Length: 146
Image (tube, rainbow, N blue to C red):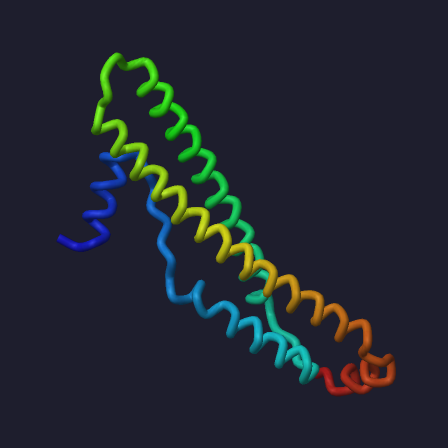
């Protein structure tokens, strides 16, 4: 059985959607440094830079949505625990696991927010470079178009 199958089965049983941290997300800071280098050399780049920003914002919103769902679940379990005349250890363990998952999502949200900040800094550098480019250089660049 593959790990993805186990994750899907656990997802089906618990109703929680796991968020995966991939290596691409970890290396985004390096990508932004490379974009900054391209900007400093006067080289442009295609839609990929904007796509990264859109994906970061989508990930941030999805993570925030998952956090809201977890908060609601935790509150429901806490309210359920209050109404019971006895202490249910399975509900207490579920609340503990949901709280741990919530903490992990908060960490993910923090990392995504940092990457969005790197993206915005690179975006500002690109805009500043484009504003500082002299009309004389723009005319020369246009002469070389085919």
